[in-house]
Length: 307
Image (cartoon, rainbow, N blue to C red; front, side, top):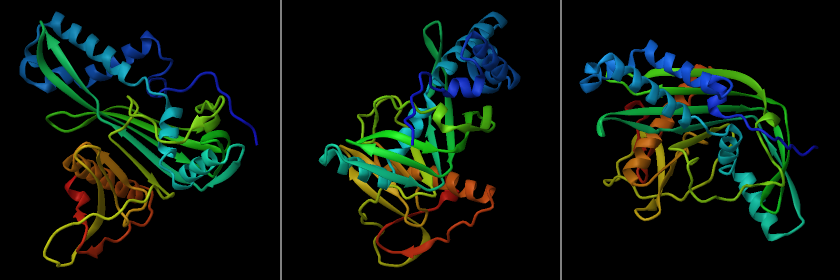
């Protein structure tokens, strides 16, 4: 087994747009123009004079490209921190200096989603808020990870695939501005160096709106109380944990690997619905069986069709 040491990571910007130079901003500007984003947004944007429209197009493309400066290797590691056996190995090796553990990872899928917004100002006045969704999906083949002192220190893995989509919320329906999918050697995107911590990190700009993992179990959470009355209701069971100070987490025992987190219970529920809908959609797209919903009386039951 060899230790992977890469000097340059692959970003979502390079993956979706190319070489990460001024040219990629031009490509994004063309994508925005092709969909006539400013006119379709309505309001004051539709009434801009040509010069102002050009300036707005340039500014929106430049700032949007900057949102994509996210290292794909960091995203994959962020998701792996949720993996039960990797997290367990990290804790155990922290308690026993010098100890190494090899964790076998079965084939699995990890979905990372973030929802950035951009406010467009004209003469210092906000005229529109653009709401994006960046979704990155990893399909990881069987891999083996070496964990020591709480860190991922070596990785043996075959090829995997990555797909990324940048979507813009619009009045007439969401628009996929950029989309890319290809096979890739995971060694090309993960920079291990002296090791990458698998223990929970402080929140930063990489923290997504939601992460889902299919094919491998994610962290187990304790049950929460749910609807009163005692009558069994058929649907997908969702378990919530947390409080208003630390935020809320949610997972579904009916849909292994689907988890979400939010600052409030309402946010966690909204994101969980989206995660469940996305997960079920991927299962159907790939022709895999969709788990049947269950009956329960003591936990919250959500309908992903409402997402």
